[in-house]
Picture 1: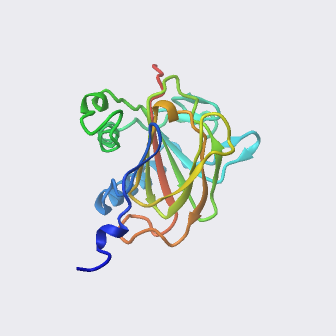
Picture 2: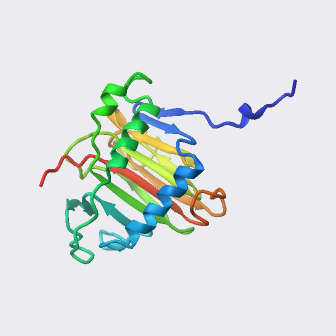
Length: 227
């Protein structure tokens, strides 16, 4: 018997705070590569990736939106701050993926939460591309009219993700590494927690994930909006 087997180095599923769950390795490499291809199609669509401007400063990430276009601090069907075109529809497969993500995260109670997960109907996704220098400051996702969970997926280079509390950008918070294929869900008491990306870890994208460098992050939300 060896002292350390493969299970010793596995990253376990972990709840960072009530309603905030990290599920490493949610997507396999084939699924990651397929989504990376979809990202390239979205980027070539009617609204190109752009850097949103927050309080007069351009963000260092480049964003493509699905379903609804986000701009600080509102949603619209048309990208009125980019080129005025209507954004691509939110894909049905992403709704199914979001529901499966909630089940994997044990939302809201345990693995028997399929019934609650099936009621989850995200209608927008912010798809952010981070190059090796990109970051994102601590912020809340609070432009939606509902407080349904946010489902976050990572593909490509790992990042240092800081997850805090609903009251302040400062401590208490925790830094966690999100790797390619990882899932992070936050809802319930953690839905309005401040969070951000401290740095990208270049050269950590696994072979076969669909990206040679950089990081794609997809965050699904339910806006609560209707046409």
